[in-house]
Image (cartoon, rainbow, N blue to C red; front, side, top):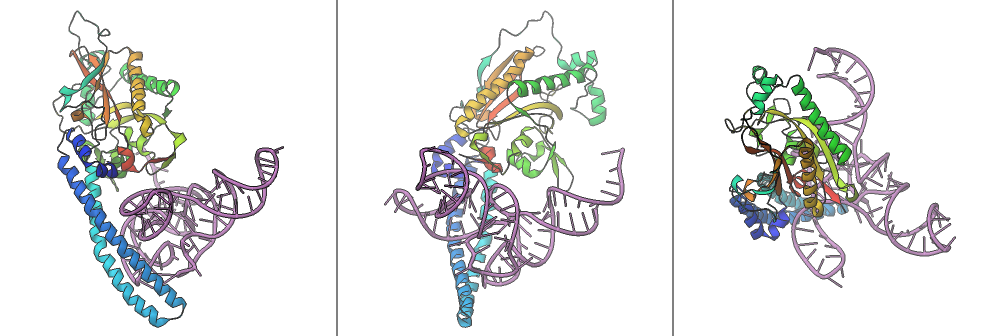
Amino acid sequence: MLDIKLVRANPEKAKAAMAERSGNYLPVLETILEKDAAYRAALAEIEDLRSKRNEVSKKIQVAKAAKDEAAAQAAMAEANAAKEAVKAREEGLAAMDSELNTLLLSVPNLPDESVCKGGGAKDNKVVFEDVAGRREFSFKPLDHHAVGERLGILDFETATKLSGSRFALLKGQGARLERSIIQLMLDTHTLANGYTEIFPPLLVTAETMTGTGQLPKFEEDLYKVASVPPMYLIPTAEVPLTNMFRGDTLKEDELPKKFTAYTPCFRQEAGSYGKDTRGLIRNHQFNKVELVWLEKPEDSMAALEKLRADAEGILKILGIPYRVLELCSGDMGFSSAKTYDLEVWMPSEGVFREISSCSNCGDFQARRMNTRFKR
RNA sequence: GGAGAGGUGGCCGAGUGGUUUAAGGCGCCGGUCUUGAAAACCGGUGUACGGUUAAUCCGUACCGUGGGUUCGAAUCCCUCCCUCUCCGCCA
């Protein structure tokens, strides 16, 4: 959620930054500015009316204490009128408030000033590329799908029998490999990089999903469980890790807080049928080791660089050639102010593919979930 | 799933319709005293939003959540959530 005070103070700057993003959010931002002004005017009016009502109530109290029934009766008539005046406007104010809130929850974060401008993936900037690490093959390498099935460690046919398309079943050394990589990552991040390991719930509430930005806009990407109340399967451990502190006020010296978690992740991947979906890529369920920092505003960009280095460290340990992209303003995710994608080299395709995404969300999620810190 | 108890400031805890502007205590911050510290004493100490000033100050809302009753609600009524105790069920 954007800082409405900041938007109010620099409307032109906010609008210019919003225009750099993909999606046509500029009109929404303009509506927000209008509604905000109207809301504040109405709020001032109603607070004035409430103040008068409270004043008259006090008069009744004083009259009753003095046993002055006549004065009390007169004041009560006045109080009734004051009450009606407040009541008449409260409904409208609540509607304005909720409308404004809905709009604020539906607009994405503003790109950081340092982010390169552009309209889509083609404008992303390569900031690092490991060219030397790429191995040349004298034959056409098979992809992981073919290699895995040949070795009997990946079984997509059985996965499909169990769950339909876009699921994987790991078997034997395949399952062991998955588990080993998870353990390598967790051990590296906890023992060497200073992260605290968490194993969170995988089912969370709608409120939790709203805190990190999945709801209200992206419900179709989630698996919703038809319980009462409805629950959602997490699409990433970012959701529970970040929401651990929803509504909390942290002390300055508690920051930064660094967490890592291995969890399965569940995504509907609606609208991506047919593209980039072979084998383990873009499955409905996959395993991920997540990194999350909570950091002070002034240190958050430096934190992003460190977090990215921690993520890169795993690729270095594994010896996988990769490159780093700085996403341009038009290609960033909803909550992000700045994003780096790590992409690994796929010899079978001769391309880099995204393996990891590191974002600084600024105060965007903190505001949505009301997480604060005290200096 | 059933029965009971409970949810009040950073913490403990009083408060069953109106000087509550949430008592009192603990903690914390500042001060006095002291060579220094402790103790004692004095003062201060929630959050958000809106307005306002040189510093300030004013208003509104908030006692788990959301409604309702009332001129007025921490207090009365309803809803939901959560915690604890006991019982039942449990692939």
